[in-house]
Image (cartoon, rainbow, N blue to C red):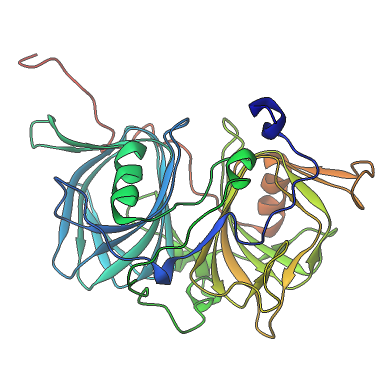
Length: 356
């Protein structure tokens, strides 16, 4: 079979967890030249440069002058951190989600408690010296190399890669701090919207974002966090208590289960529980996605392109859901979206010639 025919395979029959990994079974690994944190590698694209990791900062550890060369989103899973620069200081607790646009320089991030974060990087980031010189560049190739050296077979990036067998990690993993308990409360709680105001515009407390519902999917609630009109990327939190209609992902998508169990594709009857992270490559199809537990099914989601819905294999498309519909949902529910760019932000790094 040619590489071209593998790129889209309408008869693709996956084995259930080809695009997922239980993060609780992975170890914490170090990056050479980086002492502030350790990681669990989840996905690394050698095509786009995107990568997804879970980061751990131990109490007292600090990360300074991290420059996002592309965008980066993060969700605090446990612990507490302080994000600060010359203008302000913001406390980040579990359930806080943030987006840093390209060229944003994270001046200082310190863990006041042991902390773990889910981080999706849309490209490389650099660690800078005080005079803006690069002391360490972290790319998807670095993440891939760390995973290979540890014997971790990360989730595939394409449908073609999903056709290849995956091996399970054979070493000893370290569970997340939230392992063993449902963690939907991190985003499912309800608080006054003003409580989600931060000194920095990058962050929002997910509990302050209202649930909104698409009338066509009444059993699925959404907290819309960010919508990019430039890329079509959407970041949401999902309370999924119904059955999603058959659909295709025209772009990729990633998920982290926080509560309940997610039943997908050819997976086990008990589904996949808290701590399981998925990447659905562009072209992936779901004929039925649903909870398979008594609790609410709650998960994070980044959706990197439109979804098309139908009534079954070979039937006509009945709906297309893109960033436009998510903006409308957010506006109807009174949600305040995290901005995509910060033109007046003092943390945007302005490069200047040496001595200039």
